[in-house]
Image (cartoon, rainbow, N blue to C red; front, side):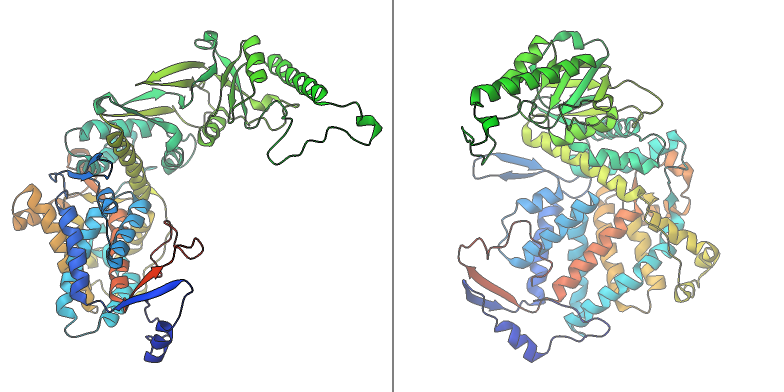
Amino acid sequence: MSGLPGENESAVGDGQKHWIMSILVEDVEMLQVDQPHFQHVLQIVSALEAVVLRSFGPNGGQVLFTKDTGEAIVTRSGTRILTALRLKHPLARMVVDCVWKHSRATGDGSKNFILLLASLLRMFQTALQTTTAWRLAYELREFGMMKLDEIICLGVLPYGFCAKLENDPLDTHYLCVKKLLTPFFQTRLGQTHCDMISHLTCEFLMRSRVANNHPSSGLHFVYTNFPALHTTVSGVPVTCSRLIEGQVIHSDFAVHFPQTDKQPVKAVVFTQHVQPKLLGEGDILTVGFEDQAFKKKSIVEFTAWSEKSLQLVFASLQSFGVSVLLSAVKQSAAFLALAAQAEMCVVECVSEDELSLFARLSRTAPVLDCCAIEAVNVATLTFCCPLTLGVQRYVHVAFPHSEQDVVVNLSSLVICGSGKEQTDQYASAFQDSIRMLLTTYEPRGTTTLSDERTCLLTDEKTESASSSAPDLQQHVLDSCCVVPAGGAFEILLSRALLQHGDKYPVSRLLSDALLSVSRHICTQTSGRFSPAQAKVLTQCDGFSSKAVMSGSSLESVSCKHILLQSVLWCATSLLRVDKILYTHVVLNTDSQKSAGDSWDDTG
């Protein structure tokens, strides 16, 4: 049971608590009711912190897991590590669920999430000696909703660089994206192949830009169509990963003729069976009819009619010069025989994602009525040929370039790895990196600072920035601000919290927690915290567009901002837990909680 009193509500009274505890659920046996102590909560989160701390930072190590089947998994991904743990305590599963949701939304920050949460809970130990957990949770939520955005605008954004895609030259944009990707892949995959993978991702995104549209549309296009835009190849070194022009369809030819390899070809997409079926699923066959018109009808006549209809479809295809047929389903033997007779290539069981991408790139539509094939259903391809990647055979197609191209220069990403598990991790890292870039560059709208916020501009630094405060607010909402990686955001925000958060006692607690996280980051690079802290502040003071061209790695303020909000929400939820009800649920599909359900409303 959890809850937080809002403006017009109070904490749950004793009588209401008693009523809630008296609820009886059918097929559920009450086993134990536990009232968690804060120290117990801290121990749980500290245990999770000890697990991810081993792989934290660019110099972190790999974590080895062994499945029941004997299969070994080696990974540095924080989300993968945490979700692989067998956690019995409900609060531990609740925290991991929060981490998983945050990582799925932003693509990054799972290890920082646990480290910051653990540090914040440690800071709460002293505060809980003078206040209650419910009161602290309320203040924490109010601070996150009312004050955090403002302090980031005043204390972090003036030292950042606004890297809007539409304003940057192509070379500056390329370098900025690469410097964002480098620390991401360093902490996710290690430093060995970081530069190669960052360069490959940048090249992939550059080729996938959407023509005549906002630059972030290209990121949306890649992220949405990523399953159809990448191919994994196991048993090959990661250094063999590359880009292939055009689209790779993850099916082999059912019928193939090599003349389509080196000349422009016409292609048509079918989403249903072309030859009518005698019986569909659940249909009942009636051999005779009372109607005189149908008395002489039989199965043989129906088969002859369906084959005649199929021949008419192929005659229509030949009139358009079609030589490649893509199908979402497995077609009949008669269909394949007529295709071979007409020297047409056939690719069956193509996924919905791949057909959707094919239709968008070719600016055509799938055939809905086989008896009425039109020009809008016919796509023009530069070539259509078999492609072997590893031990798998696929179909490789390319589209002719024109001024109406949807994508500037579409290429498919081939991701290689020594084993299937490692290859899947590389593919997941690629997709999460694109999600991280989307979080950085995606527009979010604008608001204005309130009068109360403007009054906080007191010291010399913020007074000079007061006139640009609305612009700073727009920067953080437009999600285009970046700062040097390596603890800069944590150190800047920690300092800003002390300067501007006097009215909120939790601001000092959050400031100390951020310094604790930055200490982990800085000591990995320099071995000592104070010199590294001074170096970071010096870097930020002179940060500009020149720093993007010649400086070190970058990280997104927007991603860090979302991380902070997620951690504050999780910490608030932990503080609000009153009781833990351990129940034994009889195996019943109606009463079981599905695997995809959330922990949002449990406590």
